[in-house]
Structures are given as structure tokens and as C-alpha cells.
Amino acid sequence: MESHWRRRRVLVKVVSVVAAVVGIMSFSLSANAAPPNGSAVISRSIYLASESPGFAVLPSGGVRAIELAAGEYNWGLELWNGLGWQGYTRKIYLASGLYWWGCTMEGTGKYFPQQNYGVYCELDGATEDNYNDHATVPVNKNNDLLAVDPGTYTWDGYLQGA
Image (cartoon, rainbow, N blue to C red):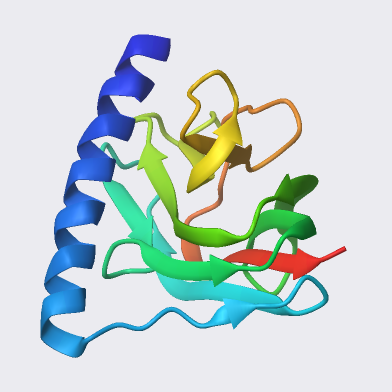
């Protein structure tokens, strides 16, 4: 299973980088510095089926370029449908610089109430997690898959100065 997730992560990164390059070329994307006591959010509304073998990215166009000031951040993600939410926040220290930030959701092909979705966010440019160029935050502290009821959800990733 781990090699599947790594292959999918590489594919998502390639798609995200291409989308980011197209976005930069088309819209002259400029990254604004986020102060350590500020916050940034990426968000989208998404319909989740009871079963899905596909994947989605957040933000919907690929990754977001963000320039961050040095400091400690609360970094997390959440998935909620108005009735309840699932999510996780972790602390991370980041050096000042430009980062590529995005999240991925992948269906397992199983039907609810089995664990039918995996969700995580990545921050390329951070130095940890044995990759030396990116860090991840899972949807929960055990990095488990989720059992998600079908429906429309708000999917948020956030960085907030700690």
C-alpha cells in the first residue's frame, strides 16, 4: 500500500507542478509573504461518493505558491459537512522562503462504512519526514484512512502562526 501512495504522490506532484506553472504563466501568480502571526487557507467544496477510486487536489487548480516568514505554524486540514468534521493540526517550524502547498484526497475504491478516502497535505520546500524537500500533514494523527458518508463537504487546508 505504501508504494501505491508514493507513486500516487509523485503523480499528483507532477500534475500539481504543471498546473502551477500554467497558472503562473497565465495569471502572473505572485506569492505574498505570510507573517508568523498571520494565517492562510486553501479551501474547496467537494462531493464525495460512497465509493471512489479517483483523486482530487486542493486547491482545485493544483498547488499554491506561498512565501512564509520564519516561525512556528499550526498546520492542518479538515473535512466537514455541516454535521461533523474530521481533521488534524500539527505544529511545524518553517524557515522563511517560498513553499508549494497543496492537499490530495484519494478514494480507496471501498464503500462507506469502510475506510473509503485518504487525505493529506504537503508543503514542498520544508525539510523533514526523511524526504528533505517536503513535509506532510495527515487527516488524523495516525495517518489513517477515513470512513466518509457520501455528501458535499468543505475541504480546508490551513497554516496559522502559532
